[in-house]
Amino acid sequence: PVRNSSHAGSKLNQVLCLGLWPTASLEENFEEMSSFPNFNTPIGGAAKPSFTTCNMGTLPDPNKIQPYPGVERRYLPHEAVIIYENKLLAERKAYQQMSGAHKIKQQRQERREMERLQDQIKEFRQSKALEALAMAKTPYEKAAAMKRVNSFPGLTAKDPFSA
Image (tube, rainbow, N blue to C red):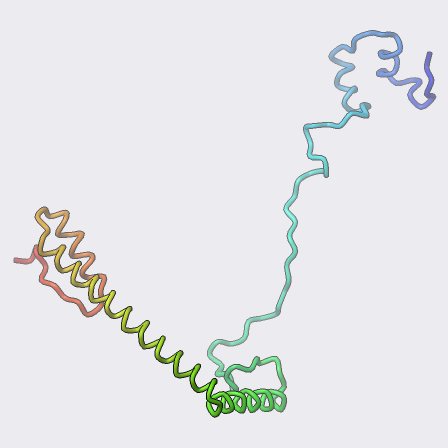
């Protein structure tokens, strides 16, 4: 008994209606006719990478000096002058106000402290590199210590192999 006329002549429908088990030749056609999902291919179809991109035009010439620092080049010259002047005025106001001047002074102190700390760390590393060179016993240790000493610009040490 075939109920659906669209499948009346299909081999799969005949096999299912008669209760026969499909043979190898019918199994090949079974995947094509089946309403079951095919797990061999991805659900959304073939997998292909998709990502959105944006073309922002050509890069600006790095050798070209920016006429107004801190102002983007996309502005017209008369607009850029106004923006630059407003930035300078805001900076001048910050210097004139006590809170702004204090903040700028504090930033300078923090920067000096950071530079001092970086210098101390550099000196410590250099001294440790020289100590490692002095304490090295095997040629491998000496080579590693020399490599470490030479990584510091301005720091010179006598090559242990050149004597």
